[in-house]
Amino acid sequence: MRQPGLRGKLLLAFILIAGLPTLAGLLGLVELRSLAIRQSDVIRQTIPAMDDVRGIAEESTLIVAIAPQLAEMTDQRDREALFHDLKDQVDALTRRLQRLDAQRGADIAALGAADVPGRSSRWPS
Image (cartoon, rainbow, N blue to C red; front, side, top):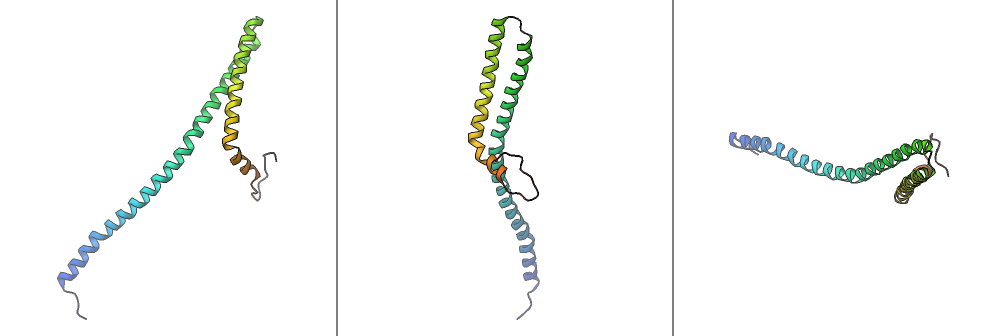
């Protein structure tokens, strides 16, 4: 078997110099694609949850803001009108929580029922 000449050595060096960065680029592209898929999954799960939290916070804030006004009312008709507004806000919050419970209740129940060593469950059985 004979040794490669200068031409063969230069060709091999060129192939290695050009090929390794190309291979690294292809591997990077595959990983970037995988990362984009995982990021899309996280966004698909996180954005609706953030919207639910924002809605609960807004509805709770409105309920808390109405309660002191209700206590300060002296006219019974105004008090009843404000009470109906308060009741509507409580009903809206209740509907949102029921919808969330229906959507994510199984997940929450599974978390509460999970048997994790060294952790006491705070969720009722």
